[in-house]
Image (cartoon, rainbow, N blue to C red; front, top):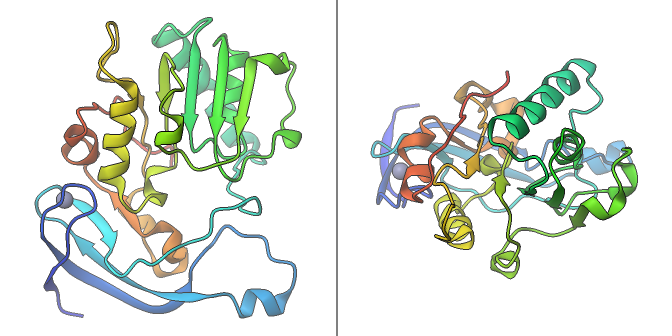
Length: 247
Ligand SMILES: [Zn+2]
């Protein structure tokens, strides 16, 4: 298809125009739900994908995005992979050491099944608060005392801005949030400007690379930030300290 410029506000920086460069019709609106029957899978809701590029900040977004399901039946964990677990445990331990989080409180927005937060607490963080509509605390195996972990089955919102933490972590999550600029500003406001708060308190957006935005990945991968330092993070006064994906 040929590229075309449309009037569509970039979800990251608000630029009024985006360049649509790829279209795919009628693709499943989720790729991480475990369905019970073949009929349910074949009849799953479909939507259109029109990838738009923002020349101002480099953000990619599905400009006809509607909605996707994130619920208790959402299954995003990569914790069944021994290789992934080894990598993620090492990352959790490095962050606890590098940012001196020993005995401190960590808030993870979009914690998934909670493994990474548990590994940070196992590595020395004092307390972990995990927020995700798909978290299943009963699946989490750890020797960490239960009172050092708090699980909230919900989407992060201003309702949780009172949850103070020494570090705010958001991994593998931004690409699932459509109004990403608005979301980042909300998180930044919740962090506040208390004495001692560092502007790099936001750690690791770890966005998937643009090559993941393929038709087979469906609309759950419909917004990817190719240059996060130039858009959502910087525009929220939050500096990304690690933007490489693990892949
Ligand atoms: Zn933009």
